[in-house]
Each structure stands twice: as structure tokens, then as C-alpha cells.
Length: 458
Image 1 (tube, rainbow, N blue to C red):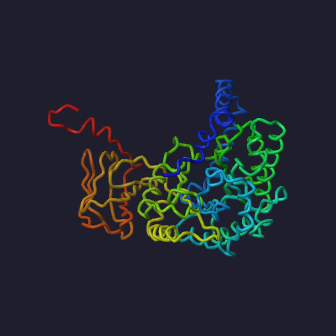
Image 2 (cartoon, rainbow, N blue to C red):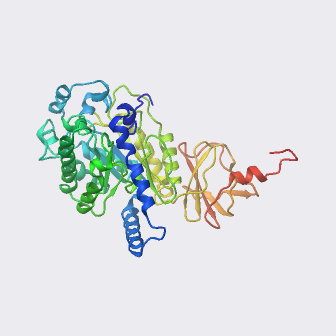
């Protein structure tokens, strides 16, 4: 994307210094801790690990089933309209930037519009910025007056968001940036112990407020740990507080602890099997509203990304960047509604799906439930769709939406689904439902190594 900085790129932005130390310091500590473990864990350790594993599985169950969520970046940068990193990138003085807070007036009811849009899109949960890097709090706080009730909005916007999501039956999450460009100790804490003590106490206090004042919260999405490491942030203590207040919550890995799930950004990269993960992506190239950014993803691309995330056992957190008054750009609305229409027909092939071991095709993506394989054909080839290297026996096939049977011919190295229409029944992705006699498995390397080549070497 044109904007080269992601949340993880802050280490590059701010140079080696404390930022690099903060990002890397936890790794030696974790390695050292691993070396100290007994080769044969004690019964107490094993029981504790089992309890933690069971707790995480229970807390993540709804999230694994949901697959698709809405990310919302909303703050003073939404009013400015130059991108969420404008304060830092354009070198705007704090005193000048904070004047935006007085002119920030989200329309009443805009959060309800977001929640209704998420529901129409087939999304099952929402995660909104409670505080982004700019330091402005969308929630009521007793620790700062740089918050929505004390500034332009004149009301607790976080509460409106939570109530809107719940009204639509959606799960509720808060994003929270540890990095803070506004607070006087936000950078000073890297080298000044007194500043660190003040700022860490302030940070824990703000997190305590959002975990206390809004009822049950389902997700806490930390971001950018610059300029401290996990020890500096007291991240263990931070998480203990969060789970003490919200026992059923899930947290990500961006306070430099493993957390419950990993967070690849602007890319789809499946974690190792057994590790929960969620790809967060934008609809254009910006997280916050950027009025000049017209590089919009198509509905077809969004559906393809969603299928790829589900195929790898992950979730897809898709961002909207509302304008300063809370309006969602028309391009985002049109795309999400198109995706929602596809999800109305095909959502069951995504929700509650399991990690799929069929992954390779130039024209399709794959999801599965138990022994059922769903072939999501994004690039329709005509009357025959073939999948190479399927090592599981196919019992039957049909069009998913119409339930019309599909003829198939399975050979040693491929299965062909034939008699299909010349043109795609669904331009975003047409789904074939394929029943197999076991978990669907694919081995394209086996095809490459064993397919007869008429005497020609590999």
C-alpha cells in the first residue's frame, strides 16, 4: 500500500533505540524461561497448562465460529481526513492537533448505523478504537479530559458503540493503543523511570476503565507497544487485571505476550495449527478516514480473503474508516452490502468451518466442515472445475446454493466436476459442496512426483 507504516513498522519508524529493545527484549526472556523448565513437567504444571488450554478453548469458541468481524478506526484523524498517522507523519504539534477534539462531533446514531452495516455484511463481532496512537479517548475517563465526554462529542461515544453492537446481537471488542503521541510521558517513559511509572499507571488505569464501565466485553485488541517491552508495560499484571474484570474475554498478542490469538496485518498468514489467528485488513489502503485514498478492494477480493482466512482456520477482521461525523464512505457500504448478499447464501460454508487441508488451486479457495469440502470458485473456468491431488474419495457433489447435483470423475491425480454452466452462477464465488469419505486431504507434491511423464524426467 502507498502508506508504508503498519503497527509493527513503528520499530523502523522510531529507529533502533528503546523501541527495538522493547520489541526484542521479551524473546531472550522467553527462551531463558523455556530452558529452565524441567524436561518432565510436574503434575501441578501439567494441570495448570491443561486448565489454561481448556479456558482458552472455551473463551475462543464463539470467535472461531464467527470468522468475520468489523474493525472500526474512529478518532480525531477521522475529522482531519489525512490518515490515522497524520499527527506523526506530518509533524503536527500536540497543541495544534488537540484543537481537533473541540470540533469532533459524531452524529447521534452513527454507531448504530455501523452495527447494522456489520450485520448486513454477515459480520459477527465489532472492534472499535477506544484510544488510538493520537491519545484521544472515545470513552469516559476520570484520568484525562482528553476524552469524548469532555470534548466535542460531549458524550460517551464508547457506550453508544457498545449498546449499538449489542442491539444487533454482535459481540463487542475494544482496540487500545499502548503507544500515545499526546501524553507528555508517552515517549519520555522509555528513558525516564519516573515518567515510566506515571505512564504505565495511566495506561493500566485507562484499560481498567474500559474493562469496568461497559458490561461484558468480548475482545481486547492491544496495539503498538512502543517504546517499552513487556516488562516495562507490566503486561503480565495488565492481563491479570483484564481477566480479573472480564473472565471470558479474549486478548491478542500486541502487548508483547502471546495472548489468545495472533494478528497478521494487511496479509493472510495462517499461524501454526492449534494457534488462533486473525488477519486484519483495510478496505482501501488506510485504517482511518483518508479522503484521497481511492484504492478500494472489490467485493470479490473481500470474499476471496474471507475464504482464505477460513481455509487456514483464521478470522478476517475487515476495517471501516468513518468520516469525522461518523458516516461510512459510500464505497465501503456498497462493498460490505455486496459481501453480505453473498454471505446470506453462502455464510454456512464460512461460519463454524474448520481448518482445511485442501489449499491449492488457481481458481478456487476451500473451506470444510468435518468430511464436507466447499470449493469456492472465484475464477469460473467454464463447464469443468478440477482439483488436483485430492487424496480423499469423493462420494457426491452438488451446487451449494441450488442443491443441484454435479457430476464428477475422480482419477488418481485429480477430480473433475463436470456439466457446469459456461458462466459463473455467482460472480463473487460459486460454491460446490463435495462430500468425502473422510477429512478432505490434498497432496500436490505427490502429484508432481508420481504423475506419469511418458519417460521424461522430473
